[in-house]
Length: 172
Image (cartoon, rainbow, N blue to C red):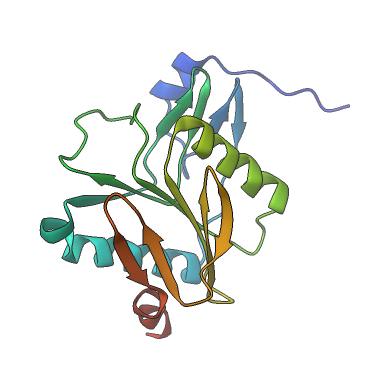
């Protein structure tokens, strides 16, 4: 039987992991990343939002620690905030959008746990994007919907992100 070694939250917060890891009730959970299609899509998302930062009032943060619960920290591939950039090194308030880029080794069970944490934390929009199939889904507290029309959208404010723009940079 495998017995997990529990790590105090204080140790997690003062330790640098390469790559960074989620912290869930004392256990570390590795994140899948590090491949070109994942990295390229992450770059394109950040670039897309950076170009619109002044007009939309958004800030894009790659691999930003979020405290989603008293002893739970998640690190989305990208998170988007509205208004002023948060001052805190670790975000304690829900961002406007959390974006997860699927890696080939991601499991549905682990992905759903991440989405559930974001919803419980109060993140209004969660986007899951698969760079290999070029498909995307939008999750809210009301459920999930595939972006069949090729557009990821938010409400309050209404923002529209064409997947063709994000995927265009993957072919370079």
